[in-house]
Image 1 (cartoon, rainbow, N blue to C red):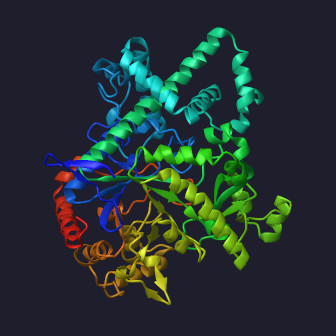
Image 2: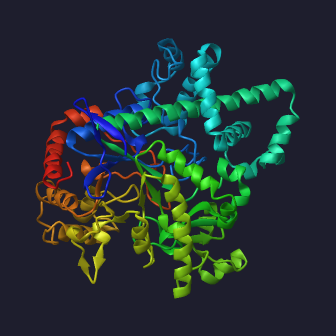
Image 3: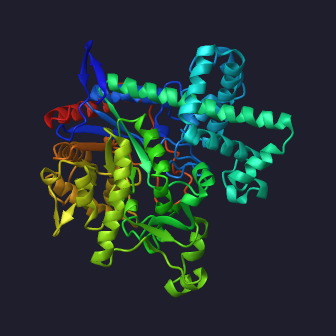
Length: 577
């Protein structure tokens, strides 16, 4: 287990389920640092770690940090290994290859206050950070000392299993209007073998330029990995663990699929079955969530000892103290669609026979098999356990969490507990025989939270239920009533004051539960009403929302200070501080 320094002595960071802890879930892009470039980055994360530690939290949970595509979703990244470049903190001398003069040149035509205002402007932010990283790479190539050059070469050698294919994929993206949609590239680029042949046929000067560009993308990853490993160590010093996230799937348009097409099933799209809870999206209620991720050829992955999964787990293990696997149910079986997400609107109005007529008789279903028979359930459980044991073996001492929400087969949660993987407890969903399960009856090997990045914050539920009626107000009142029962309040909340009565009670109930980890989403912690993503939709606000206040303002604001004093007292009272 990692060591941290307190008062000059070394102690052990205790991540054993025997010790209850609490954490905050926050998307990195949503943070506001004092000197950020329009998006939350490692610099803002350092400030946030300090703030969390001062309150008494022992964990900060982040969404996936892999390089995103045009939809900005961290769950649809263009690489399962590469780090998103905009997470890198860029300022004079960070990395070493940037000077104050470089910044002056790069920011000359940038309206920084406008870039920082409101939500993340991903296109502009990416362009600016790319410009700065290109300047840094130019400086590094021209004048870096031999020690740094040696460190860079060593990094490239150590990460060769994925890095070189990724860097070549990024060059091919640039050759094709920065699009990762490899299946729509010119024929000579549409496979790794053909693209390598194309490169060999180019004139020497063009080959040299492309090689240099590949080195640039490797350099960016080197800098990113350096900074993330440093922030991991910094968190340890503050007694805060960092919790990462591995999505179950990977984007169809990714370097991984491009480099290893035989290991993926490309004519089916993975997702989740119809979900009545998410009433914001009609398609999700009727057909389910079509994420567009390719399925896995598990047998082919097994033939090389699941090399790709092992590299993926190692990539997150070196940066985080523990990690969550999003949609862990997919290891057991996954719901699959015979059409890509871009056709969802076409299928929305169709009934089942009309849908079959459009797909040639292929229907959405669970793969490799449904759970309709005991034999199928046993086979799915056996498969899921085999694949998860691979991830656990590669994780080594790093703790693993499984996001086991949605339509959960009866065999999954007992199997996760057998494997030592902590599952999730959403209090308003933990209902048996019509009764809300008390927090004291939660399994210790679990993670309790009221919401993930996909859910409405509690303040938004409250406003819908009592202040701003909508079509989902009834559902919001129903959920709040269950939360009230969990918190020991009367479920009739019409005369309850949110700040004075409801907020303190629900926070105390979550923190005093028996769950190993209690996680509070940042919007719930701050009692804000905005959300970061609406599942199954491609709304313009998805993955762009930022906190209204910077970390420094959260630390100094009178209202926030009073709220955090309350939380600090509850953390201490619950034994999580």
